[in-house]
Image (cartoon, rainbow, N blue to C red):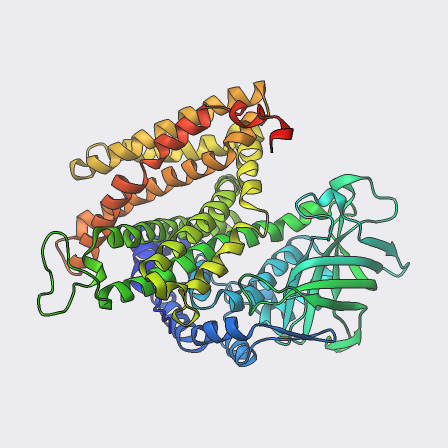
Length: 595
């Protein structure tokens, strides 16, 4: 039976020591109550709920899965009670707007809790996760009347939200959407069409489900410029704002999936269901991107969460499982064989996972801190700068975190050998659950294209220029730190390679657009590894200052893990650079008939 313990010490290291997030957030009046003691208490209490109530449902929920019967979806045993505990504890409303019943805590805190929740039970996390994204879209784009009706119930968690984009014939290319919206003449619209792959489209956890649906008005332009966004409730609220008349929204079936089996993935049918326009007509895709970008960050956190829980269980197994003697001499002569943990290849797999997890955790919390700054900093220029950083990093987090999450759950499964392939040990579920994160909310190939084709060039290259300036400034600030030089030098080499490659792509991409497509996935990984090198350099700098004091073992291990990252993982950037520069012709010159 797999287990999980929230990585509270490392989360606190990132929040308090590395980023000094409390000091930054304290400068924003809206977060004056988010004291370090309060943040620590919130993390402690969240850990208890996730470890004791939600995590024990993970294995059984996967085995039982969701059940579908005549349009009704039933979640696995225990999910309703766990969701009730989650809502009653106020966990879904933690970072919600106080105007609608939220607690108004920083997104930075919410991100740390999100990691723990996805580690505990990623299927469970999807139900409140989609609701948070829907709240973000409604808050940003709906009119005041819709906000007053829907947001308080959704923030509390008694009503949930979904995102209805994909249709049987239209996935990434949303310009092909056929769902129709006809004006009813009373401020509402009749929505007709079918959406597929809708997470939480039907379930038994909440009183009402609020669907955000992309659809076309009769006179809409073709393509993505003719898509509008509509709010379509399962039940139309009555005069007391309680679920009233049933709206013509039904679940046709649920998908039978490789993983996340306790999360209902639904085919949703809209048969002239009443919907309400969110944002301007024909501007629905830009409105929906508010939710999509929030979800892309959340999907990236799933990769981190699964990487962490897989690591913990693989370490536990490697400590206890006896297998062969160490090549360098017996380490446990009193036992029949040495523990797996003595073998270098086992340590390679474990340290790979640990180094990625801890680097990703630092990047995730830093990104969340910039989300808070982008929303609440008093200076418009600072808000815009933070928003640029979040925009640039979003596809990197979604794609790289989910890529490495799948890679590392597989590595951790390998540590368990044959037992890793058996359901009861839990590791094969982590692998299956991790796989979807590379696919949904825009495949990782799409994220890579977003980075190279859009984020590098919009606003005349302002986004990467500002980020590179940040990295260069840090390097310059630490040149006199002699103890840090072995790591700073390697980081700087990777950074200069990234910067030169970015310039090369900007030139080659103008000559041949296929060069950007051919480079995209490798470039995103190189970008991510270099970014993690920045955070590992910073983490080592903090650890070096404190390694001789209290908790010396924690800081020495941090330095050793960083050494592994720089020696064994960061060198990938050289081969990635070489592969990218080999050009698109290696792919595009092959005749179609050869495939």
